[in-house]
Length: 294
Image (cartoon, rainbow, N blue to C red; front, side, top):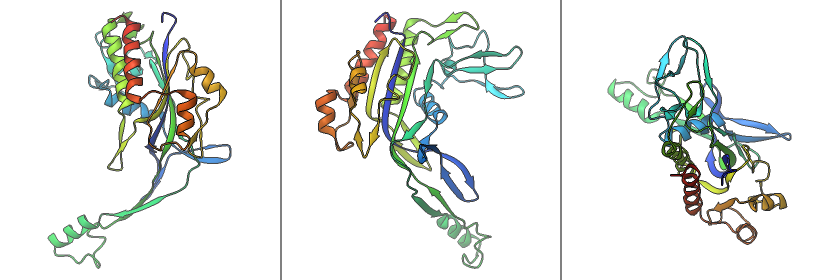
């Protein structure tokens, strides 16, 4: 375990996209273009913010406005004693200080090509209530009543993202030559893992269960998204390629939720020997505690 320096995971989740540019009352999901095809996505910034918030890492966040709105950083408040700064900071108050994030998240990219599904809504109930309260005719006075139709693209699909945590950097702030104790380091990593295991998103007023339906990874001697290029889904089937199998064999675990999330579940069980999602994260938490000696 001494040669392990990082924790890396690649996750498949059935989640919504976040939204990019809007034009008037029309909102479009964020997309990327790859191999001459369009794929819906959720940005790494959106994912990271959700993880930081739901893990409780932002509970002690302090913000200052000093020419720019930025995280408050000082000798008394830094990454060693403020977990909200674990995701990195650049503070330009006085001398500029920069600390890179101790963990990195990729964009969550849909596994299948984007198919537009447009949803149409309006605020009819509010407008009708306003009309009744102000003795207006909703049909004649639609504008005065604030009646407004709107529409947006909708996407909820299996998306793939990776996250890698630099275990040597957790709780360390070289700008002030300070670091937290081992127990706090373990708690920070475990809180991030808990957020990933139970991740949920709120999009357009809807609660979105973003928990993993498939996850592979563990502690690694390489600070990179080790499984990013080998986890693929096509036609609702997980690609069981030799590279994926060989990499899992180097001391990593794989887990998935059974229940027709993939069309080749029997093949996944036979060739990858997965454990449950709950067991996967329990094992990972135990390894993190052992790594930090707590």
